[in-house]
Length: 192
Ligand SMILES: [Zn+2]
Image (cartoon, rainbow, N blue to C red; front, top):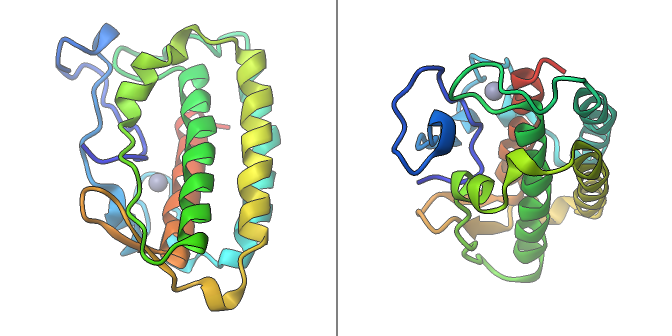
């Protein structure tokens, strides 16, 4: 199971029975987004400048807040596809997880990240049952925090390494691209 991957669940898939309402766990390894633009959202992660990530994250926050204010934010648009609320709760946690990972890469030499199973987190934390207003506030706070963390990165830190538990190797620069794609891709998912 890869972690922090865009949840590109296809409607109508037969997910394992552990997944309520046929949410299909995303087991694809999305690190290919570092090699070529994403065909779904058009984002080119390889072109991301670390110095721009903080502002780019902050730019997404009002769009998430607006999406969460929709009357149908808690409704799944189709079987197997997350609601706006579930995507937003996921992105809030992406902000938190990548803030931790970046902090670790800046503090330690080639750290290994803790595994994060995003689909298990969605179930264990009950994303679908959370309050959209609370998630909006938490997402904004977590977004501001990770944006500030990226703001503090200096150019000499761009190639500092870190590793996922599945063996994927990142630098601060590639982590930045991978992370920002995830956030932008999910805005695309919710058409925000
Ligand atoms: Zn994408």
